[in-house]
Structures are given as structure tokens and as C-alpha cells.
Length: 118
Image (tube, rainbow, N blue to C red; front, side):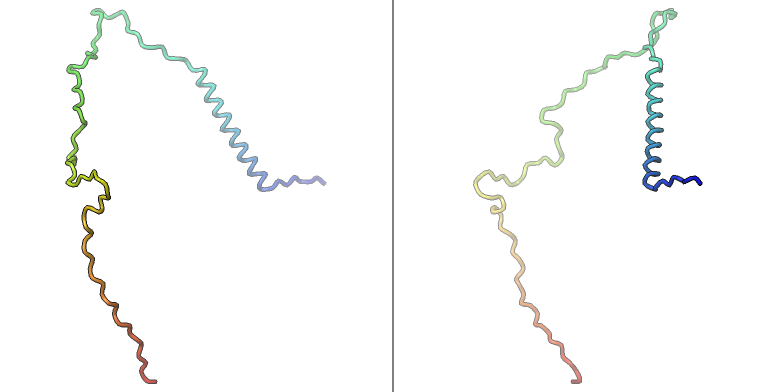
């Protein structure tokens, strides 16, 4: 009797993905070959059969030159100077006192559970 070749699941996955990669590689090579064999497009040249020697078209020159940018950039709506300027020694946080905190209250008296009926 003949023996059957048993292939494991891991080997089947490797062969399947290897075959898919081979097909994709062949398709890519085929597209690259078609790209290399394609004809190049010649640039357009006007024909000599025009009677007036022209043929429309517009003016490629600008009507007015663009305005140069203003110095300093675009003014921002919130570009007002700060009310505080601090350039001396020390910290900016020390210039203003901290707000007064609420007074600390004594903790509420603790309640002890009272058992009824004992």
C-alpha cells in the first residue's frame, strides 16, 4: 500500500502565503515590464496650418505686481501689551498677594452609634 504525505498546518500556511507573495511579485514585475515598454508622449507643438500665425491664448503677465508685505506682519486682534511688565529681580508670582483663603472650620463631632435594646 502507498503512504500518504501528511503536511502540518504550519507548513500549509507557509506554502499558502509564499504562493500569494509569488503571485504578487509576478504581477508587480509584469506591470513594471509594461511600464518600461510603454511609448513616451512627445510634447505638443503648434501646427503650421494656422492662417493668422497665432492662436488665441492669454497674457501670462500679471496686471499689477503684488503688494509687498507690511513690516511686522499681520496685526493680531489680541496683540495688546500686557498690563504687567516685570524685568527686575524676583518672581512674577511675588508681585501680587495670593487671595485670602476661607477660614478652616473645626471638624464636626464624631458620632458614635447608639445601640437600642441591649
